[in-house]
Image (cartoon, rainbow, N blue to C red; front, side, top):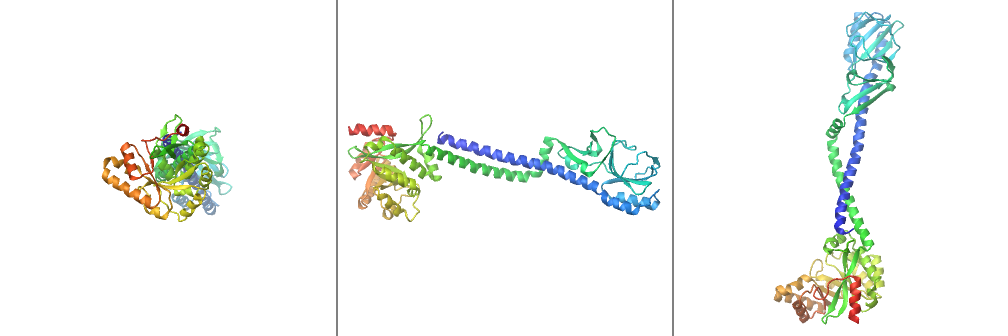
Length: 479
């Protein structure tokens, strides 16, 4: 795995997590929505059937001595029906005869005078359709039968085909017979026996769900994307961190030479090596590492790899330079590794131009390193945050001239020469040794030598190389 694949992998993780979070929460919301629809239908239905409690009390109080209803009693029964939203009609049964009905039919014999309570009759004598009614005994000879309006499953019909189970007899909208489990033509039930279910139409239910919860879903989608984005970033951070800890980023050394071409040291550069042995350009991952404050971890990894390598066998007089930021300076592991490494070489820590100094105790911390022989350089002088005031506020041993100034020596020799001359003059006054970076041509080297530059680094002399190549190079040079 390399930095090129970590980014798309993290993006895939981000998208996958966003989809997973959104779909999971949406599924929960959807199931709760369906449950809410069923509960709402149950609430409405039980409220309709429950209204019989009030009517029953009125019937018992007003019609306790009822036989064949008088005109006044008939009017009172009609008023009860008119005032109720759930009752379709009321009938009076006296001595097994229907003697009155607000529906208009009467004087009909019935053999079935049932006990008080709720009943379902699958086939009405009049309508030939199922009916639901409540039987109330007002005295020994007279019963009042309260008929309910056909079921209106308005909530359930939005998401499919609703059905109500009345103790084995299952009716749908408008009292349509859905199932008669017990094969009964008549059954009694209580409100506790009433169960509501729905045969959902997935498309219909989903449309209603989205329509009613669109605002919540849009907010959820946004939050899921934000959640997935930050988790993806965390995944990217941890993957890069894991690669650094496992030394996937290797130290490459670019030799530093004097004016005679002798190797006097090297700058340790970070190179990400893929599984195929390819090099990932530093500009692709170094800015990310600095942004994510992983520089201390990378610095520790490079210091440890150099310490455990064969480079140190011939490096007692070598100047080995490591790039670091102010943040690295205060990392205990960097300090410990620097102490160990300084015992085997002349260790130089180069402050990069990419981040500014912000801590007031930085000079004191630099002095703690100096007690162990560590030296300091300001890298890419004149660019980024490596401003001139650093030279007065902090003690440095080396000043590295940025490649951009060296490049211009061939393009605009007079102006560029004057600029480099001023840097050389400043360095001499500040008692700093100079290193020219990015030297690529003989003419550049000649001009820099004339200007008094002591050390050079660039492709004209050596390209960055791995530990083995550098060890072999220094051994051959010593021979």
